[in-house]
Image 1 (cartoon, rainbow, N blue to C red):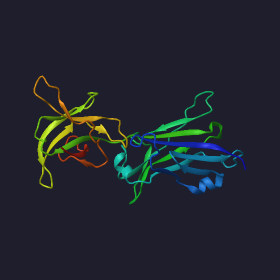
Image 2 (image 1 turned 45 degrees about the vertical axis):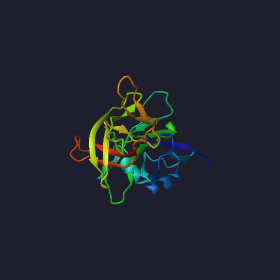
Image 3 (image 1 turned 30 degrees about the vertical axis):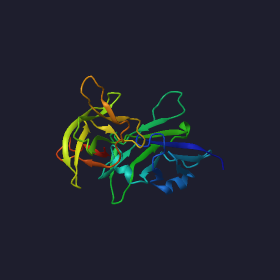
Image 4 (image 1 turned 135 degrees about the vertical axis):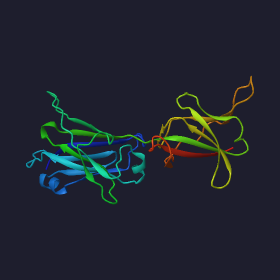
Length: 254
């Protein structure tokens, strides 16, 4: 039997960049696919649903689940809902002469409906997609945004009390000096935290340096030319506004 691509699902996530994010695509109703002779092939950055060229039983819509294989995705994806699973049910655009249909979805979009989330349910969302052989292949892109957090550098060592600062040579990120704090191990740390949230990514192109100001006319001395970037060790900030703002803690020793 000859087959052709019917639905192409492409999943992108800002945290992983060009690398495939640990999602998989599963049929919400496998029996519907079986009756129509459809085959779902999931892997890499998405999935492909193939259909017989001479398909006999054509469903009006096909429902697919986007499932997180890594629990880390729950805390790294904007729009992840802890109590419900959003259901996106887009329609195909009716563009004259356009044989290829393209659909774009983000978890931060408004869903058409939702399902209760069961314990252990790792579904990011459910896609209720139109199925029209005249428009094959239908392409659906699911674009996930990474969370943002305040990057907090905790500087320990004999130079932590000196006039140090975190510098972004592009001047896109500014840092506030929050003074000293006592760490759980009893050591004193100087806290320098970004004034605005910064996206969290697996490979971040941001380059920050730790510098110490010198008396005029001398230029600042570079103590650490490339600081570690914020990671996925995220936590809420007690009493912060807004309440859901996150912080990524980075510990640096001088």
